[in-house]
Image 1 (cartoon, rainbow, N blue to C red):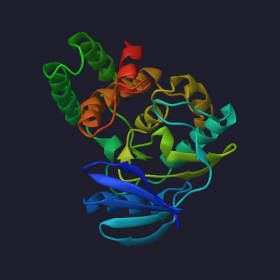
Image 2: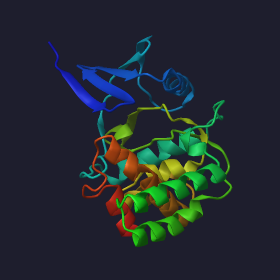
Image 3: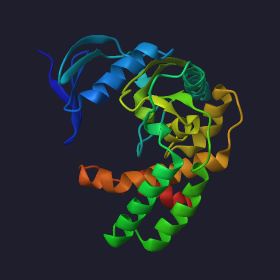
Length: 248
């Protein structure tokens, strides 16, 4: 009998693996609705939906391996990173889904959230005020007009699978929707900035690197306190706090 592996678990949702089946348990059915809809629309490889019985969604495992994880080593040739970039570009060029995703929050909403989060990070002593201030200035460049694209919205490196130099699947679509394409690109290489050139070679078009850096800063600032409150270590080597320090 296959063992049950806890892939991720916190107070909002949990993902379990049993053999070649992933079971996603989420009390917020809106997130599951978004995920199923996005996978049906995305022109890239996605997991096969086996069945759905709220609050559980069962998905088939995708073949291949990830290029790495935040805070851990990375693998894959430059060609594999370029293939990831090409797949992301295919997604971004697809017809827009019907709703905004996490990458589609307005600049005004993001600025307000960022101000609140920076104040909390300093007030609670989680991060020093000078680091927060410098990081906040860098993040400003992300708060600008952008052309909507079909975005994944949580395109962490661990969410894209490859076999050699072929992308075999992209998972975890609950934050998908219309959004800023550079948010996806920045998220994918967060903590692994040395692979950005290979990723962009496959993506096939020039991007504003200052905005990529801004998204690294903004995403990290918004994530630190949530991660700590949900049992994750944002201070681990190579993770969000290290990213902020490297940018300033």
